[in-house]
Each structure stands twice: as structure tokens, then as C-alpha cells.
Amino acid sequence: MADFSLKYYELHTTDEYRAASRATCIDRILAHRQMARRYAEKARKVREASGAARLRARAIPGLRIAKR
Image (tube, rainbow, N blue to C red; front, top):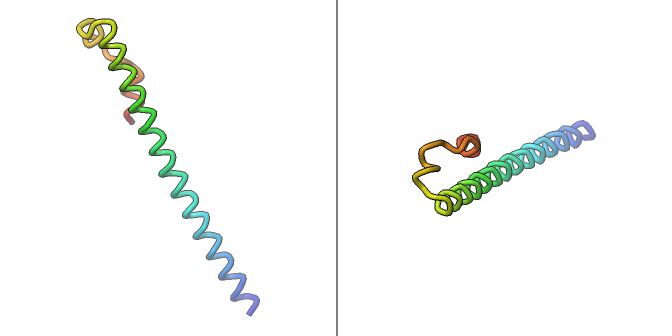
């Protein structure tokens, strides 16, 4: 009986760890998307404020990284 309960405990904790790591991964993805959205919004505002033609000609280097 003790062996069975130990096995159950091991399986239960493994499932909890998997669920926690999944939640952490989803949270990380959502936070990254939010950061990319904010960066794109700031870049758009800068473009509008200082003249779109001048900034549109050259790429914003960090924007490509933020979209990944």
C-alpha cells in the first residue's frame, strides 16, 4: 500500500510540475506579445511625430527582434 501511495504522489507532483511549466510558458508568451505590441506602438508614435517618410526609409532594428 505504501508503494502505491508513493507512486501516486510521484505522478501527481509530476502533473503539477507540468501544469506549472505550461502556465509559465503561456505567461511568458503573452508577456512577450504585450512587449512587442507596446514597442510597435511606441515606434508608430515616433514615426508620426518626427515625419513618417524619414523613419520609414530605415528599419527600426529592435522591432524585428521584438516580433519573434
